[in-house]
Image 1 (cartoon, rainbow, N blue to C red):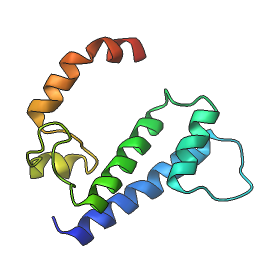
Image 2 (tube, rainbow, N blue to C red):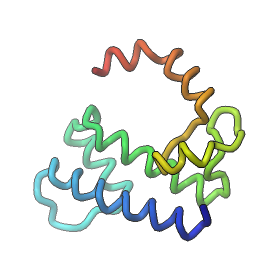
Image 3 (cartoon, rainbow, N blue to C red):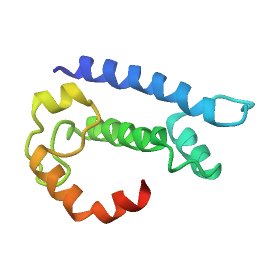
Image 4 (cartoon, one colour):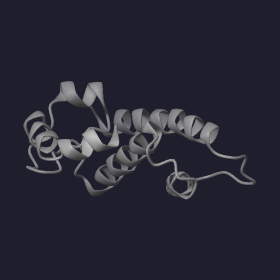
Amino acid sequence: MNHSDIHHRLNALALELEQQALALLPPAQSEYNLQQLINALVQHKLTQHSVYAQLLKLDAARCQLELGLFGLCADCEEEISRELLDADITVQRCCSCQSKYDNEHRHELLRDH
């Protein structure tokens, strides 16, 4: 997957998530950038909504791309498999580290659902 393809997929996802997030918020007088949209969801106590988590992952993926770290696991820094990235362009961890993370944080996952 080349840099242009990644940008295209992240931008398409951003448009989709922005529409979903805006539907949750009261009408705004101006447009939101990604960070403002995330902050608006926090302000309106919508952090439990799935679109909030997706926007955070999108923001992280964009930051990783800017830093030249896109496609590397946030924990072990090994390459994330192409299959995982194809399934979710914002994935932050390889399969092994995601399993460890889920196991270590399952009490938070249970509490949040």
